[in-house]
Length: 430
Image 1 (cartoon, rainbow, N blue to C red):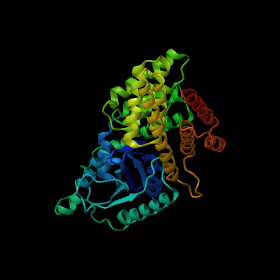
Image 2 (image 1 turned 90 degrees about the horizontal axis):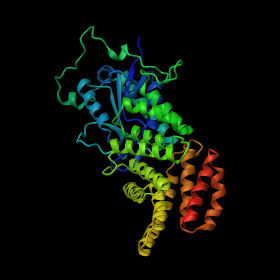
Image 3 (image 1 turned 180 degrees about the vertical axis):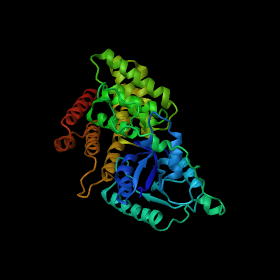
Image 4 (image 1 turned 90 degrees about the vertical axis):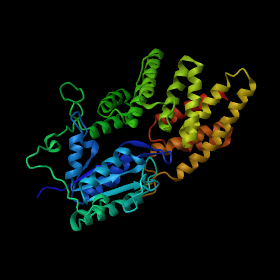
């Protein structure tokens, strides 16, 4: 007897929820909740990006929406592709469809008859208790819908009682079964990226390279991801990040890499009109570094604008602490002392807000069963941001008390060095 299949419809990577201006890591939902629950229920689990490769995506996607024994659609961040594919599933199959969403999701349509199972996502991760609870809830739903009682859950078939489920004609070729994308990223002989590699494998390898700080490798991998999925903002953002962080021999090379990253963002993400704080943070970072290398005042003003807009859209500590820092940089250049004073005053106000934001974010960090933070890097950067804010506010005693404790928690030895370097830059500005 063939294993039953589950096709998962959802976004991947980090996506901005424009309804709440939060960034959610949807891979945490898939890897932590959905995939384990599906596989523990005895089904094969396939996410949409598992069938994205150099071949044609459309036919296998529609085949899965028709043929899969179960479809799970996570609509978190109001992903338009997921919502569309859910609609297709509801039109093709009367039952065995489960809808999930992060608990702050607001459905854009009036579908009171549709059951949406909600969970709490904390942005970078999900609490251990929430993961365990949702896994069990999902396993129970799978057992009921797939193995016990295939009741109608599609609103299309609920209201159109006489509608018959469509079927493919006998003998039709299944591209889903015919095409088996590679699980290996690089060709053993040439070392080049394979054309038939699974998108999900390619993306995971690129993310791992970024985490290791191997940005040249990450850049080539994200370029391939971008070829396969050119419209995805997360891919573009990661490609721009890897591009400007790729190691360069001299300032000329660094400027060239920054201009390349700037063009990637400009051509794909419309930074002058975007409401995406992640894009604005990257736009600010690129121009901040360009300013530091070529001292063009236009780059400095663009960096101030980008960080300011990103901060007031999202109220996040990353854009906030960088906004305050670059205000202090600009204050040094003003000929008008009133303008310089204004930038310094705003910088102090922003740092006070950043401390509040850090305190709140630390309370919401996803926790393991032992109450340790799931993401040690995120916990460290929150604490390091607090150090920089304290320095900017002249709280030298608190800075001294907290710095050694915070440095001792760093997951990697280079992190405290990076923090000390940034603090020294701020000391020179102040």
